[in-house]
Image (cartoon, rainbow, N blue to C red; front, side):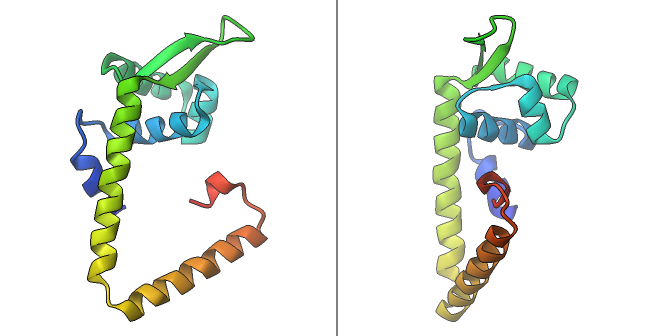
Amino acid sequence: MVVWGRSAERIKPKVSPSQLRALVVVDRHGSINLMSLADELGSIPSVTSRVCDRLQAAGLLDRVAGSDDRREVMLRLSRDGRRLLRQFQRERQADLKQVLDAMPPRSRTALLTGLNAFHAAATDLDLPDEELA
C-alpha cells in the first residue's frame, strides 16, 4: 500500500484512493454498470454514484447507455481516464523497481519464494484471478 500511495500522489489530476480504485475496476472490466461496480468495491450504490459523478466531472469516466437495455447506464474510462491509469501504472512500476533494487539479492529471492507459495495456496483455494491481487 505504501507503493500504491506514493505512486498515486504523483498522478495528475489528483484522485482520491476510492476514485482510483473505481477507475482500476472499470478499466479491468472495460465497461461495468453502477451496481456491479458498487458490489466489487464493497460499497453502496449511492456512494459509488457520487464517486462516479466526481470522476465524470473530472473527465476521467464516461457514462453510456447499455447496448442491451438503454435504461442501464454503463461506465467506461474516458481517454483521459485511460491516460491517468497508464501514468499511475508507470509510476507504480518505477516505485516497485526502486524498492526491489534496494533489497539485497537474498531478500529478493526470499520474496519470490514467498509470493510463489502464496500464489499456489490461493490457486488451491480456486479463487477468481481478480481476487488473487
